[in-house]
Image (tube, rainbow, N blue to C red):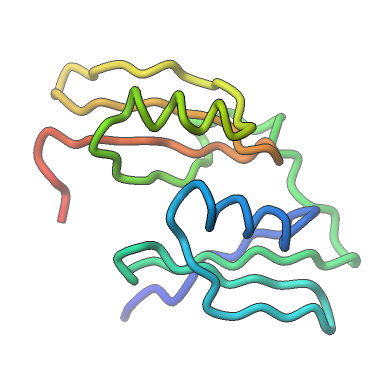
Length: 128
């Protein structure tokens, strides 16, 4: 089996999608506003799709209350420090400053403007 997408109920799917396209290199593969606003975004390698939608029947997750190590979306980065600073300048907030882990991986975590955790990672040894 293959994962098709990961869905997240968020408050402003269109605005969030626009930010992910502009600042994280994703692209919209499907956008609809009826029966609920939804945006499907693909990563730059066309390997992962996330769905951002807003269903008024359910309450969206309280992202600020969720520890970023418990739930985050990780992006490969060639320069974690530079991408971290670039995303902060684009409206993200700091969660975990750039650091090198004992295994040699470099990571940092920001929260996007909707408080969802976005991890930047440069692996010493690529996972795939």
